[in-house]
Image 1 (cartoon, helix red, strand yellow):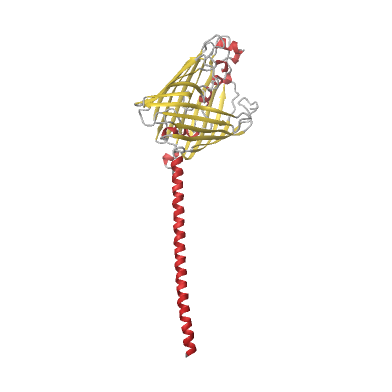
Image 2: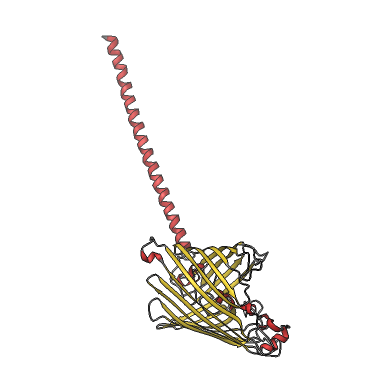
Length: 431
């Protein structure tokens, strides 16, 4: 018995010590596990705090697209939703065009199919305080500054916001005529390309240096500016587009006044008119070259149905003298009168419940007619190719309000039988 008792006497303290060590080890493991859990929670909270700090720091910069401001597209309006400081937005467009190999008269079209990242635009705005802000649009065209690409400022202005009905705007301004000249973000129109009437006759994108007022009064909104006039030496038989000065070292011997009024007294309906008048000679040819442009427009949205219609008239004085100065003869003449318009109709199938989840699928059709030589001065003639009819039909799909995919086909006819039809695929986005 003594050996057994001795063994028990020795083993008992050892077992007690072993059990105590095991208990301490288990307690240590629990403490370590608790500490790791606390550290993980601390890191999570620090991450949340960092994300919140970043959100607070950048929230005003990357504000979501909100309500439109009179005369501006959705993303271009972001600065107006910012309390103070910097705002960033933008949009982009890309397209593929497949041209018919022959003209209407059977001759080769000479046009090659093309793919183009058409433009990438950045909006930069800065709100100084509750009254003064700066807004700008910087555009990169054709994905390059070479091979036809360019970088340009589309608008850059200072707003002084004093009252709903009377606000100041000065700088490089978008001329407030038509739809697309101010609303040229790709989610604001259905077709791949901008309507031809608004590229040729108005002509988009048309911007000049100036100053003026804008505001809202009841059911009416208005914009009225004084801007530098066209440069008539850029006019041609194809229209006034080449007379835009774009704010770049613009000749300012002659100025022009432009004003627009829209009525929105019925939900979904916009009715408006706009007019432009000013001399375009710019002291270069001994003639004023008085130039007037007026347009009337309607935009109606009702239960998925969309209708747009626009008519434009342009008148130019002293055209014979201008032709002689530029060396134009015969059918090269600039048009004394230029006119055209379009009607566009579309229906969003999401309204009929065919798709959902904030999507839109809009088949549309647009009929256009325009003539840049509707009338020429005595002793000159017109080119029938400048009397154009275009029928465009297609579909625009929007998986969300900031992204659009477009497909359309345009049939071009003119008096000379040289129209070339084309199929287009496009994508666009705003942010």
